[in-house]
Length: 289
Image (cartoon, helix red, strand yellow):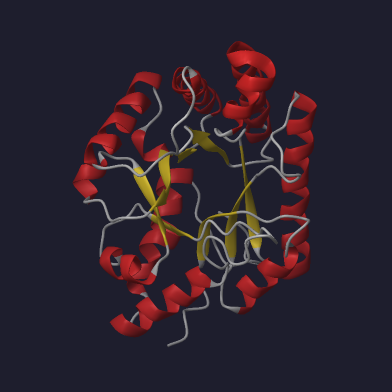
């Protein structure tokens, strides 16, 4: 069944690259029925930034991509910025742990300034490398994450968390970190959630679920807030990774078809954005409220 024309269809986490499909992928997303993207920054030249100016240029590239997406496709692209937690591994080798942490915190401050200036809507991805790291990196990542939370508190924005998969204890620990930092739990989003978490077990942290077919069926009736995402990487060397950008609108259409109604989709696409970001998304052309 066709989706209602007043229903936003949102991919909460994806990447686009000027060296990949870029705006072309957003055009395919629009053709499939998508209306809004949360566009997370990434390292565009295959290596971690080594200076704050490197991060500034990276953020500017993300902003330029978002502007092109809106102008050329009609899709609304919200910018999400932060130094990637995995950068700390190479940074510690090149700059030493203290130098890597200082650069990371400076880049978080820069991202926070962009949020304050309304050039971005959230800090992300922040958190920890999702694989075993050399000695000392975990402590540096912990310190960087605490700084990310302090910036988010200061500029009053959500944080999008990159980490290994979380069980109930992991969500509880993440909620406790938010409490210590003074960041409301509902403004902490666990990106790349690959398994359903019972709403109570999430402890107020918001899962952004990878839009795999069976997982979407499992979570479809869960109360908001929760999101759907593809984590589309737009990497020419890894075509289609992680999920294609057309996946969320296709899953949305399938959910509506199976239920005979699109009513349940207002949870992830409208109520969740209102709860986490504080504003109501609307179809392109109608103006945000």
